[in-house]
Image (tube, rainbow, N blue to C red; front, side, top):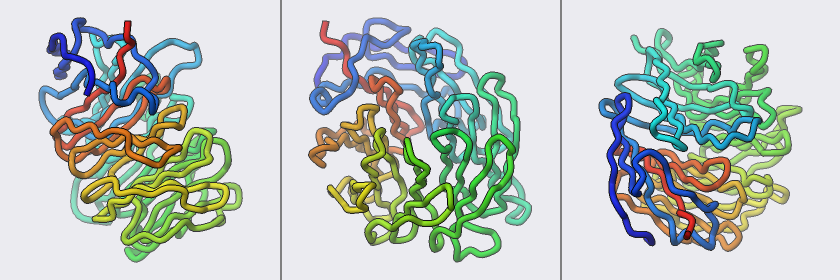
Amino acid sequence: MAGAVIKTFVICLMALSISMQNDDGSSLPPLEPITPENVAKLELLATLEPEQGEFHELAWLPPPDDGADRKILAIIGLNPNGIWLYDVSDFEIEPRFWAYSDPIEYLAFSPDGSILATSTIALGSYPPNSHPIIQLRSVETGEEVATLDPQNDNIDSLAFSTNGTLLVSGGSSLLDMKDALIWIWDVKERQLLTILDAHASYVGGIAFHPTKPILATGGFHEIWLWDMETYEPIRSLGEFSYFPVCLAFSPDGSVLASGGGHGDATLQLWNVATGRQIAAGEAANWDVRNLAFNPAGTVLAAGTQWSAVQLWDVAAGEILIELTPGADSVNSVAFSADGSLLATGHQDYKVRLWGVPVNE
């Protein structure tokens, strides 16, 4: 990995330890967008670690309409339970913390950045008195604005539609554990619109097409594409030895990436228009846990079960580089909106920020 470490600064802010790998203890250096041509120059820029508790899933807050260059990273925290929001453009800014009474599993922002959806597990006795719920919060105020209750045993995924009108959750039903269901919610009215009986026993990845009313869902041995105007299936994609646990559309919607789970370590790229596989490769020793395209759609990041973050050349369908910080399973990967930062969340409860410094 290119780039010498000049100095490591450690900053402590509001129960957060930040290790900076540069000569400025408060901000990241100027960065280039991450591309297939410069991924070999990626450097570990900073490591975020809670002073207590654990970090888990993460997501970038969509950038504001005013064009301000703010990069806000939301991270699920456990013990204490809540959401941390960090402005990684300036680590001297005090992070925000929204407390939750119950542990959080997944999070998703509405495309305009106004609403944060989280799935939580209510503590208590086994169903029906304890099951996951979905909470919606105003990003501006941090206040809860709605609670959605799908009455299912597991919520395995959350996603907003590209226009922000729909929220989709996937999981298993309390009433029939043989079925894995997709709940479609009206975000404005805070109401359930319909339930799709999508897959047998499990719903893994969920992803919305960036420009069309199409939903991709991963289940046992299969991927389905759904027409979200009629709620009817369009087609299925391929056959899997087990099931795909993560899905991601390229920014232009032409490619769908899928990652296998529970021993199916393949990463596959699909032509969305034809449903045909265009590339496949072994991505990990066990599972592919998370996928994310860079904004240009040229690089695909894959977080794997055994510590590695793989960066793939989308056009060539080949691995460009592996980032191996020495941590266990990589639970989350996400590119910033300008494509200059890659955030990775790890099983050691730390979040790492990667980038390519501008060669001055």
